[in-house]
Image (tube, rainbow, N blue to C red; front, side, top):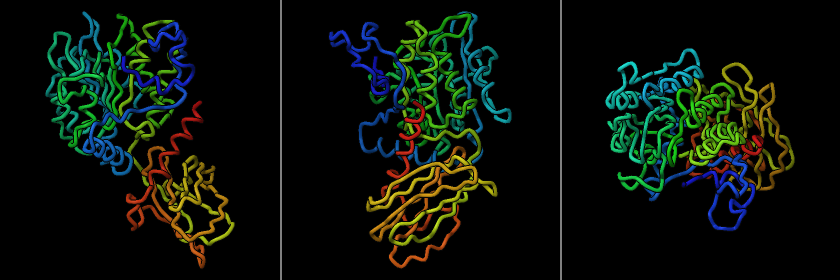
Length: 400
């Protein structure tokens, strides 16, 4: 199977017996993720642009009033056993004030049009409890629940959500009839909507009716990690959910752990509430020479502890990051020797990222300022992402 766990589980060689067949039982894999991995499944500059644009839009400029919608379509999986069971369990994880949109075959409420229209209205999360192949998700009789052609036709625009599923083969990025891509890839590559991230199976999903099986447990565990254990980085939540079911000694769980891949930026910060602004204070100018740079972060009028603040000079002389303390404050020891621009970013769960800067000048006055808006300079044209996304590697290392 195509498995990105190869890039995540770094222990061993994956071919301990030397027969060039990777990932066999005799290769003694532990299957635990040592780093978080997400796939940017792109084949050209257009798809690359869509991937980056969706990630930035979700993280930096999400529309209001859609994040708290969780779409839960469910069909009959085996005779008299419905996906409503796992979807009800997922709904129990979301906050009490969320709108859990349960479209169930058991209740006669699910249809291809109903699912398509609900996604177009905007959902923060969507879990398909359905059958599947590389081209979509389906009812037990073979009727379509959502097809790759539907994934490409969605017009939910910037109301982008995270889609995952127990369905077979819907994440098989080595196949697919629509553009040569699988269902998950088409959700990701739709320029007018679709998903910001997908977690789907490269091969068959497995269940054990009348109880939940491996694929259902892995899906539910992801929502436990996000909503109940507050793992806001999608790569960490995905890896940790799989880790929770490692070591069972059951081949079916090992199979499902290996085949379940993340399409999207592993560093993506997930929303579990309506995004709020950060109020960030720091000097507008920084003098040359040794000194202490103080940054304070608040949410409204309350100090924001645990916000990750990163500083990076455009010339590369300064780079550092850390978390704010209980007072919302962090201090950096710096010693700039060259006049430059110092980029300052702050990220925190369920808060819009702050992107600011200070000028490093020989005659700097060191005047503090407070701001909640991006500076007038075109920050997206400089390597701001270099100051931002390495924070994820810090979180991943902390996870281990």
